[in-house]
Amino acid sequence: MRRFRRLVSRANGAAGACALAWREGGIGGVRRLVEDAAYWRLHPRVREWRAQLPHQEAIDDAFDKRFGVDTAGEVPLAEVGISGSDVERGHGRYRPVWTSVFHEAMSTLAIRFERFTFIDYGSGKGKALLLASEYPFDQIIGVEFARLLHDIAAQNIRQYASPTMRCKAMRSECADALDFVPPPRPLVCFFFNPFDDATMDAVIAGLVGHPRKHPREIFVVYCNMRDVKEHLDAFRRRPGLELIAQRPRFLTFRAALT
Ligand SMILES: C[S@@+](CC[C@H](N)C(=O)[O-])C[C@H]1O[C@@H](n2cnc3c(N)ncnc32)[C@H](O)[C@@H]1O
Image 1 (cartoon, rainbow, N blue to C red):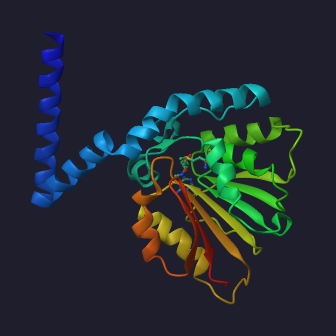
Image 2: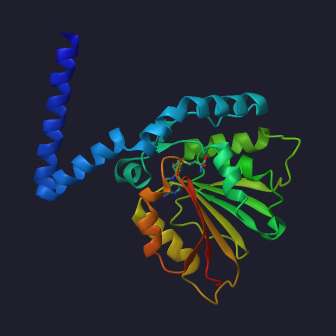
Image 3: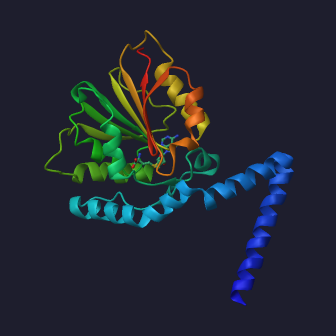
């Protein structure tokens, strides 16, 4: 009986979502809804991501325990003071990047790290900042618009002391990525799927769109733990970026020298 009730409630929910999609977008809206639902339930990459979550969460917990920090777990942005459309613009929730994916992405950068500033756009509790400190970057900056997450990141930075740390000039800034102006130095710009395409367009345009103003090398690393193909087309449309590495969970680009 309980199972039957659950089925009826799911069918009601699906019918309501279809009706809303129809009202808002007609047949195109309903088709997008069905495609999205199929992607989230059936796509092999999404299923693989789901299957790996418990293992990755155990790795995140072990990292936190070892260093006495707080980076693990998901946090809905609505629970940390982000409101309305900014929740959607910011893809709904904080999640820490997977350690192995971060290091694999860094290994595609054939650079002298000392010359570069690492920026994490949408840095949350600062997991990527702590991982980046294992490389001899000139400095490491996180940009996070949720003050509560920024405060946790700042505490994590104070607390973190890895014996293999190679950059200690590390800080979190509480700001919207759209308002953040990076220092005029060579940059590694890191994005773990933090925003919608419109925000990403604006941030990338701000980085590569001012030739002659601050001539410097810029690398862009985009991570997505499910599948980078979710946003590959949007990246292909962006001018000024040359793809130098593509793996299932990250893309690395070199910006045309500006
Ligand atoms: C998926 S989490 C990634 C956290 C971190 N970069 C990491 O790799 O562990 C994305 C973060 O981006 C933040 N974010 C989303 N939109 C933002 C914006 N416009 N400006 C600054 N931060 C933003 C969210 O609050 C969230 O903490």
